[in-house]
Image (cartoon, rainbow, N blue to C red; front, side):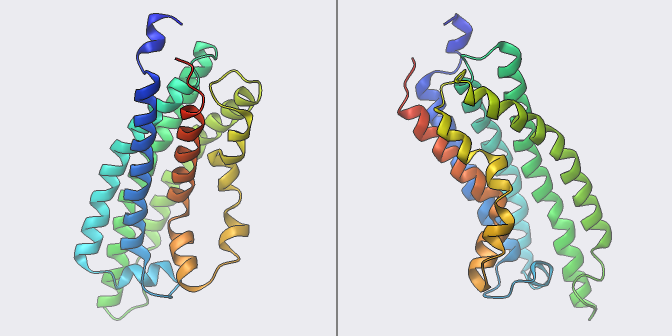
Length: 223
């Protein structure tokens, strides 16, 4: 390895993985602050009755999680040390972009929550005033699909070709694989479990990914 490969050591990479896991738990908590209301499964209706304190606290989790998630992206940089430099940088930068987007999109949900709360206060249906905020949030998500696609298209073949510190089985837990399992998993759930898993699904897949990534690197000390 060259000196630059030691910018992130094996021990540091493990710690960065824990940063990603903590970020996932923080933003999952933010999801629950927005959505959880017993067994009620209408997300916007649930946000309309969330207290002001819950909405503010959820907004704060977006910033904290964005910091923690972005630090966690450093683990990917370490894991791809054996790959060509352009591959390593592409995977790292695209994944970091997605991690930042997680915080931005969650923060933008405050507009949806406050719109739903205002509608309820005025005696209107919770989704009566949320069209603009939902459309803006959807636009952010659409932009985020680009770095997510780039990350996935480079991550999977590089891991499969064994040009990383990951074993091949990590692919099964990559974010894109778990992302496409959303409908069959969440669609089979009801009540509280649907709110908990469905409402926090995007952060739960990162919790799983960072956990698997950390375990895989822990068991494969290449430094």
